Length: 295
Length: 329
Image 1 (cartoon, one colour):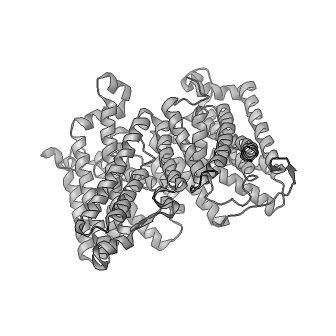
Image 2 (cartoon, rainbow over the protein chains, first blue to last red):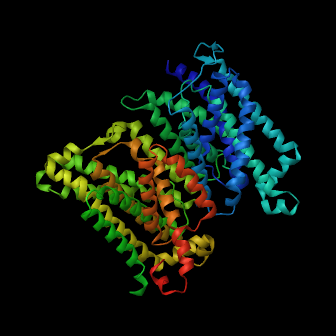
Image 3 (cartoon, chains in turn blue, purple):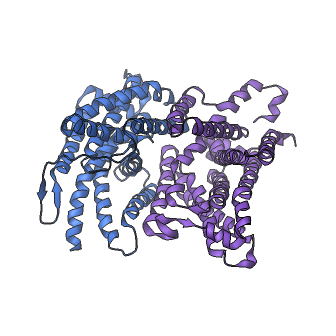
């Protein structure tokens, strides 16, 4: 019985893990290129969720089409915040960039709250579901998983096959060296920040398939924290590491939930969340470069 | 004694604030709020200002301080012979919990630098909060409500006096203590060592400075002061504690804003920052209730981008080589 439950939950964990992976790639990309931890990360996920919700429930547009809209709006937000704020903070001490990204997050949350109110909302895509002997999986979750993998692969090829992608990797390795080789480092910073934000907003679209009624201006905080854990797990500056770490994290999270639920007298959900942070803690202690990171 | 002159304006401001609150009817709550921000800013600044490390999880100490006070009072209130002593037991518990967590954090987190340190500190805060809720220790997410325990121990009148006056008075004392410790550290070997860490940690190590030791001293001091503020300003004053209310990163952000407004690494900065931040927050809550954050977020961004040295940093530059300079640091 419990094994069945565990297996069923692990399938859900894997699907959610793909979305977690996508949601963290943007964080890792921005850290890798600019050395900035985006503390307002979750707010951008929230923006993606609200884009999907508005397109679906007001205009009747399918969430599949929300993905390109989210990417474009995310990149627009990314360029806007880069040129107004982040550009001046690349050389500043950490304090400045941490606080600035946090403030950007608050700003987004409050603007969204002003427009949509603070209630929890949701939508129902009604695609049907697959019934397996051990569990029932809504088709929308599978679409979200496949979508995340496609986007991650796309990013991979963009990084490895195009000139611009190579230039981004060069800046990650050594920004001064890249500058000497004729790379326009300022533009790469802007582009990477925009792509990072675009990816994050897109992952918000995917995430809505997993939270039927959980869309709220303040929903992002918990994903910021999960993204931190996943990013560290994946080596902090590597987007692919982040993707695989997301898969691992999804599996651990859902698996642990089933096991914690067997213990009488505890609240399994918060305990699962706290497990994530103890994992982070031990990881930082043993191998700060991440499980999948370089030395 | 000349090297302690900068304490004069700080303590004078605190005294004036106290007198205003004490003698002018209806001002006490506002003055108490301002003292709270000043005390927190000053305490946070002891570690951050001197080392440059950003402790994003600072609110953990404030929260643990509150829990210490809550546990102390709710476990010992039935012993009548302890009298006012239960407050001190609560304070000791608060400091004990905070120092445990500070030592654990310094063991793990202080080996890390930059972004990793900030992430680790946030992780500790969230991990603790969810652990308390998940494992249902200390009342789990239902928290601890101990106003009844206070009344049982001291009677209604004394309890009211305790929550409405003495809790805030204690915050004043802590704020002053934080300022004194801050300047003492600045003017001693600890401060020089930490300044070396801030400028270039590897070079400091090569010069033979035991960086971990000094970082731990400053971290512990800053954490204990934060716990003491939590024990009184949230513990005794509110007489209840819920994990979802206290382990909130937004309070760390408030500390950071206070320090940044006034000027990081200065003595007078957190005081001025606390006054400006507290007053504007109070004013916004009256004028635009519900929209404070919407107004604050862009202001924070503007300050970081165009005014990173803060008010006192700016004043310091202007008063250089004038007689005023020895009072401002």
